[in-house]
Length: 480
Image 1 (cartoon, one colour):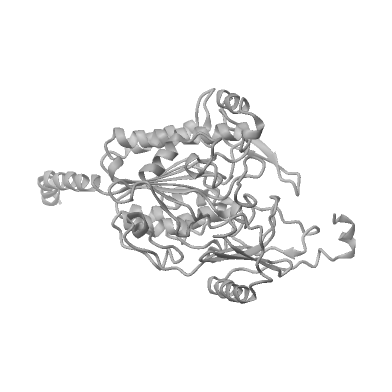
Image 2: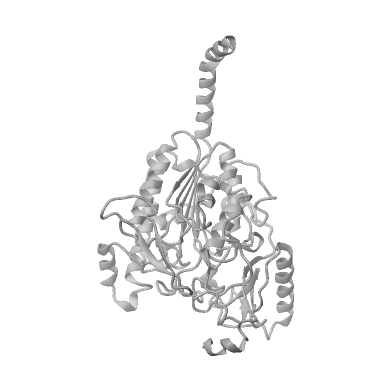
């Protein structure tokens, strides 16, 4: 035993030397920062056409990277999209198709029973964080999680070394310190209380606090490559912006506003947080070796912003609910200033990140994702026939109804699960989805309906079922 210990001491300097060399090599690896904003609309950025919201840092990111015009969230509400980002799988395949924990279903007011869904991202899914950690990456999650109702489904159990602010809930009680609050569940009247997602001091603003934690994580990474997921609670309700910013937007004539002044102030704060992250990367001298992905989990909230020229908003399967901003910044790899019109979706981040960091792809895991690196470099394409959505649920948002969607080329078909009716749009000619072509193009309806139903069977999409309580005589008086 004494000989073994002596031998270990003799070899320790060599081990340390090799470790330093490995760290130097790791420093040259590609880092990844994934910034996921909550409820940010497709047209809520200057680089996407807004003349109201001030987003200079995000606009600069687009100028120096690739902006996607036809990027989509995997669902029209948050939790399923977040699960798709982390797993590389469609929400329907995961059986996680509704925001957690409960949605808005009513046994007396809704004709159909909702599709069944899980209340957490299954632990058996190998997340992108777990895949990168296996390759020596330091992994950090900061902000909104909303993917599990119990603590053992929190980020630290899904591959993240660091979890700051990731909880079961989807919104803070307040955006000003101490960030706590309470709310009632409409169907039961039960009052729930939220703990503070992160510490702070009086006067602190949550967006700034999360940006500060992101800066700390980047600095603490030292020479190890890292994966940081900065998942802002903003710009989700409650709509609370910094007073000085709110004042600025309230001074703008109402006819020139795109949304509420409080929401605009929140967008500006998120933009500043992006600027802080990018400045930290530059200060550390690693901005040239970092892939930055900026996107949203669904469309903009109807009471906060206008998604025009898109139709509808968060919670709807029209374009305003599922089309989102997406910018990828990767110096030396992504063609600066390029606009890509290829339809892409949340599941694509997983294989793209693996490819960018030089890791082997895991097609058995990110089965629904495509590697977007060829699109970033403008030297190739991706092979995919169509994009799909499955939302067998009800919610409180305007123009929302249970539906399935397929987008194939410029064509988009929506099937209403309650009525069986379908609508068909040509997005190249009708981005606002105002002209339903289903009666004029029965051939295209048949083709896309078959694609949608074949896909539903393939992924095991859980269907809606008749709701016997809806037609019960005792309940007829309760219906509007």
